[in-house]
Length: 279
Image (cartoon, rainbow, N blue to C red):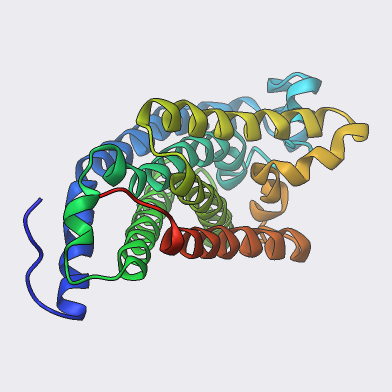
């Protein structure tokens, strides 16, 4: 790592751009794979539309257990936005969460694991500036990924539509995706303050993402397990309502989401400023 030259905001900008470039390749890979994977699933919509004329008939494509676990009961799959919400959206949210929780968990911890933190600490930068810049990079890539996913979903709806599509529904789904992704990015970033070894942080973050997804299915499968949905952030997005153009989250889930995002990032900054780092 080369010495960062300049002063004040110039150094902050150099650090931000350096980190953006460092993680650019992995972002491009994820930003290409997720839309390409979606195209294969969305390409089946015209045939699906011809096969099923009504929403209730379309749900016959799934078993009752699948309808319950994935919350599809209120989704009109004969509309292209409903089809996207049921067949594509949940997978994109899950994989995007895996990418962003890993990014959040490694962008700071990797500096210690690779012993490059020594170089940052001797720069004309405070610890606060370092950690806040890392937060900014994580948020930058969360925004960038969700812009790519929204544009891809819009393009696919335009390409495969049979009787129009709802831009409002796509925007609501995009907002829900962005909030969920920010939650996992913030959780990963908080973990990075305490866990710095890559061999530990990768399986831990993947386990958290998949565990939260499993909780969503478990919560939807039984009325007695509904309380588990509060611990699965994937459940916060009301896909059935969003695909109709209504609010993607109710007020309670929105407030919890914002609390977790702001809280995790704020605690990470606070702890890192006082953390004992051997340089």
